[in-house]
Length: 333
Image (cartoon, rainbow, N blue to C red; front, top):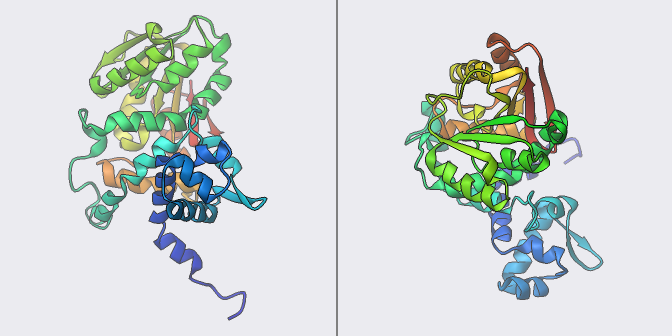
């Protein structure tokens, strides 16, 4: 065998890729990254602090080294820079909740061959069920990955210096955008439109952040619920929703948003966006399969799709901004 010949190593790692989800989920469940950050350096110390078996601790460490999330250092182990930034509990950016959530979703992938054959979910479309109990866990897990995106949007829009602005958060989930922006601007107010069970979660979380008294909640389906009076809002945010909607529904929403924006106001779309030739980025391309599994019309859409939809619905200043996450921000005026 010569160096130019392909090997099966990468294919084997991809075929067994569910182990990555399982290992990161299990490590998150046992606070492995937090214990390493707080000084555990070997399997024995990790087992003692996490109250798990030493054999299990070593298996997790081996797996995390293979994934590049833990490094060998000075005869022991430590978190990688990525793990320290995003997998240590107590940080608003911590993704361990999302890791545990996705580990619990692995069984649903057994339906993917049939879903691919028929072109959509073979049971209820998860993203379209208002009273689905998975929202309680999901919206909080999603919040952490939205934290750096909300900060980037706040910087771009100069939220802190914007004065007494009004914000409409469509499908706001945990309220992470409203919470982040209201903390930066004590004169701002927000309205969140979402299903009642999700608004109940946001009420609790935003009250805990100390900004709940500046948020109004509208219970309803954004497809049919009135968005507000004409010219009501300086900023409208539409986050992590476009991927579950088809082109017609997204354009209908963008058109309705135009009527409630103040002159000079901004629509902020936050989502996983793929390149126009669908060659990348990796995460948005992969996420398209999740939308096939869980939605009737969703996908991950191209920059050209967003630009076309927004242009057709009356926006003429459209810009894209990458973030410190797989999410792209779209600003339309």
